[in-house]
Every structure is written in structure tokens, then in C-alpha cells.
Image (cartoon, rainbow, N blue to C red; front, side):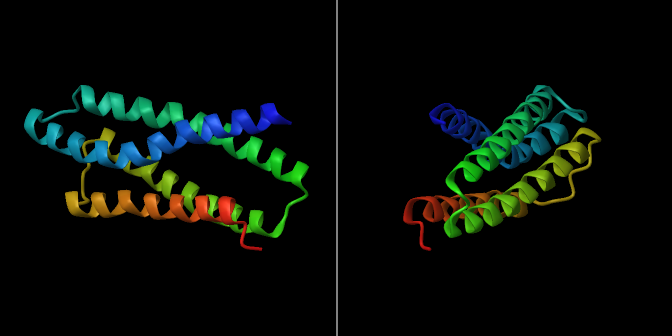
Length: 136
């Protein structure tokens, strides 16, 4: 069971990198697009990062469910799963932003994207609190 936990943690780390980096990269992608008039290398890099981390997110969720089943689904884990579902929704919304950016559509302001990016930080803090404190 230790290997499942190791794979879970490793994939979560990779997925979280994208969750934190992609919304910020969209800001720079937007600026690059305005300067070049087309998608440049930053857009390609951002898309590839999102696509790669999508697979890591799937593996993280699968191994998390597997590990949760082994733990017997304690009450605190229900809170963690709920928070992870919300974070996954945020991530899918990020994917929508990436897809629109590939088409050259940047409707959100830099400020909105920064705030959107910080939402994931607060969600991550809440998930870590649920795991470490195991409040119930």
C-alpha cells in the first residue's frame, strides 16, 4: 500500500504545479499574444503543461480513491474528497481558459486571472488542513 501512497503524493505534486502555474502562465500568454498578434512559444508550453498534468491529476484521483478505500473512508476523508472535487472543477475551468486562449480569446483581465489563481492556493491549504488535522 505504500507504493500507492507514494504514487498518489508524486502525482498530486505534479498536478498542483500545473494548478498553480497555468493560470499565471495565461497572463503572460495573453501579453505575448497581444505583442505578437498570434500564439507564441509560451502558449504552446502552457498548453503542454496543462495536458501533461491532466494525466497526473487522473492518476492522483484514482490512487487517492484506492488509498481511501484501504483506509475505510474515515470522516475527514469525505471533507478532503469534497475539496478535491472543487479543486478539480477549478482545474477544468482552467482548461477551458487554455482552450479559449489557443483560439486567441482572452476575455479575463490580469487581475481576474490572479484572483482565480489564488483560489487554488486557499483550496490547497484547506485540503492540507483536512489531511493533517483530520478534524473528525
